[in-house]
Length: 243
Image 1 (tube, rainbow, N blue to C red):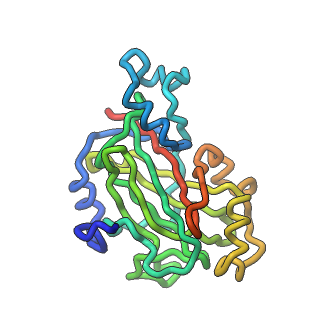
Image 2 (cartoon, rainbow, N blue to C red):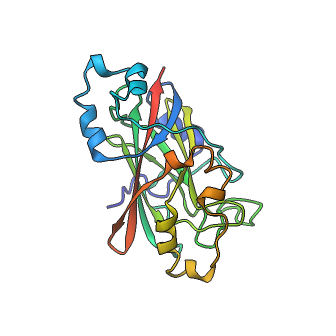
Image 3 (cartoon, rainbow, N blue to C red):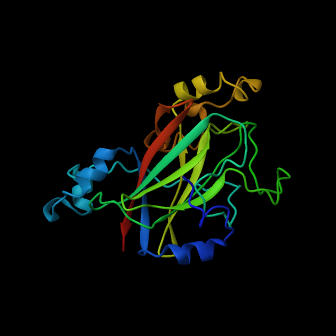
């Protein structure tokens, strides 16, 4: 069920970040997400925490590098869960976890900002594509007590020069602590793109292996994707460290 107090409420990025609250931090990146990591986090002891524990593998946050925000980032995304705005496409539920990289414990009230193109490869709110004033497939959500922000969207399309991806930022205490891109296994995209409206644009190019950004750590930013009803669900965790 939607959160009516948050749905479609336009805010500036500064206002959204001030509302979120939290902790000053710097980003370490994102990695594979599962319920087990979040449950295990509650049992992490002091002797198995901290950056050294992460490096040694005692803490199971799998981290990935920072990535460029790209040319289509805009301020003022709406605080909302459903970002579809009627755009046609295969349903996709995103469950994006945010954890403390030192302990893998979930972080509550982090702000997660996502944006991606529609099935035809077009972004909203951009002068380059003539979509100023439109807000489809963009939004901000706060993480819940389990450290998870949930979005309802559609599977992204593609455009020449880039593999299929979703942009993401994480904010804590009014600061940007992670900028990244989330990717999909080619086999999943191949299956999705056999369906309408994606099948109207065959021969996507490039695929993951030929994408310049994916080659710099994208394999560690792959969403874990499963079928969900007539669509899909994608999960990942973003590990950050608090200053």
